[in-house]
Amino acid sequence: MIAKMARRKITAEERRARLVDRHHLRRTARDVVQATRDLVAVHSSDPVTPFLAMWARVPDVEVEDVERALYRDRSLWRLHAMRRTLWVVPREHAGRFDAAAGKKVALKERERVTGWVAASLEVKDPVRWLGQVERRTLKHLADGEPRSARDLGSEVSGLDRRIVVGSGKWTQEAALGSRLLYVLAMEGKVVRADPLGSWRASQYRWVETAAWFGEGWDPLEPEQAECEMARAWLGRHGPATEDDLRWYLGWTKKQTRRALEAIAVEVELDGAVGYVVADDVDAVKKKPRGVALLPTLDPTVMGHKQRGFYVGEHEATLFDRNGNGGPTVWVDGRVVGGWAQRSNGDVVYRLLEDVGKANAKQVAEEAASLQRWLGDHVVTSRFPSPLEKELTAGA
Image (cartoon, rainbow, N blue to C red; front, side, top):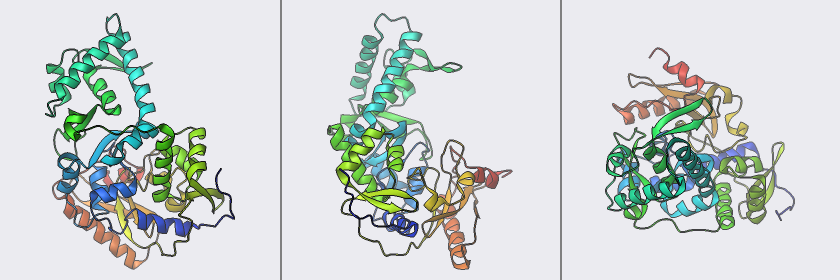
């Protein structure tokens, strides 16, 4: 059972201080691997997010540092896990993400692709036929040479077959390869290697997992993985509510309660019951200090379902209708504005509240620093917020 000792009150200010410290909002991370590990995972649905998230946290980081960790050292793994989202995670934790969230997502996705094959192609046994195409694909990729989906479509029999994907009026025709590779990556059989284009591109080359990493992930029992995920997440994002944890990991209420009962202690938040890891109850006495510019879908921005303690009244301005957080300006652990990059390369921002002259000056310096860092590269959010649209209108 969850420990129910006298609940310690954790204020919103202390929660913000924890975020500033544990999420490296003052550029305190040693390197991109430590930063990723300390954030638990970094969203990668928008390909620029991992790079800009590291810029905000690692002193003197360059694009090449992130690319090295992803494609040469291979200490980071880009994979699908909770909520069907694409993430960058530490390589050693990939099995945890799979067992706690990814495996269930992969099963549903394979069922969908099998159904599309059955409805689109005249094959007697869709499961058997799809398995044959899969084996040919994995054998072809086992030489360790990354290939694009287009190249594979011309090299592996069956991958170029066209199927109708989607349902109802939301359907389209696509090559089987694009959907099968997606499933194989969810199952940990193939890996997204380097992109087709620059670091801002979202089309990747593919390679067989063992050929890329030398091994796959170590299998874990679901309940063990769930406890490890809950402990890791609460240790970096806590205190948080049950709804926060359940939303972040895409779990059922039963899964969430089971994990919390195993590893958590109740605390009192402003108007809610919260949870922390059992050895993390002691007060954090630091003041939340620091200025940061965080990108679209940054893991700190997207870490909680109930995010009022750091977003305040600005959610409608800085999040789209689907709940995707746009680029944000942070001061002392609070979201105080948003930023964008215009087509001419200018990084612009708008403060939504008075932050004082010293902080306002530091925000301006951060925006100028980001513009210099980006150089000739222009980043456009895949999920622009209302404020981002305003800042780039007519640019």
